[in-house]
Amino acid sequence: MIIDKKIEPSRSPFIRGRLSVMLWANDLPGIAEQVGDAVRLDGRTFKVTFVGGDADYDSQRAAEKEVGWRIRGKADMRRPERLFGLAYAQGRYWFGEYGKSEAVWLRHNDKPQPYSTALGTRVARAVANIAAPDIRRGLRVVDPCCGIGTVLIEAISMGIDIVGFDLNPLALKGARINLAHFGMPDVVKRADMRTLEPREEGPYDAAILDLPYNLCSVLTAGERLAMLGSARRLARRVVLVTTETIDDDVARAGLTITDRCVVRKGKFERQILACKRS
Image (cartoon, rainbow, N blue to C red):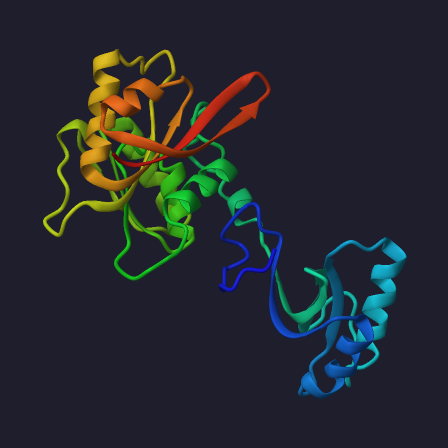
């Protein structure tokens, strides 16, 4: 898939890397012919790696070698100063700078204040991406039931402007400890999300709501509906995480489900619902 947009490769847990396209051609000799004139290393080392396309192992290595031979400079297969990628997609060969994704979210597994039923960091990062698919100046996101801050940490690490609220003072204490552990600002306050109102400048652009579900946080039907209604009031778009099928309640709260998926861990399932105001 070719995307005409510069995406930070470590932003999403589902992106392995980003190829910033410099050259393209209908065949491999065409790319190789262009590379020699287009690439200037200024004394730095380099490596060419095949990053995508329908080719077997031997063909990939041969393509790397054919293109790499045309670059004037010293190759370094282990620690290159510049990494180039070569891909075959949409009937063409593509060449450019390649940035590998770094699994930042895995570092966030090691929290000083963990919680057994909190979202995994990979899912939390994906949810934050769904809520804020691009980072624009002024884009505001809220996590009105933030718990120990798992979603907040992933969002902040991607540069998303997000704030969190929770009614449980122990959860907020844990969130503050976790945020400080990763050098992140204290963006949490104590509040009941059902009484929260949008800020003076208007509703948030998106809300992320992981509905409570464990034995200590059993919701009545009325409480859940009130939380969904509050999420609708707070934000233009809402990403819901639930362990139950709540489609009827979502509709009653004035939200429309635009997309959905199921995340499974063993027999345990979470539904992730992308919603907008009806």
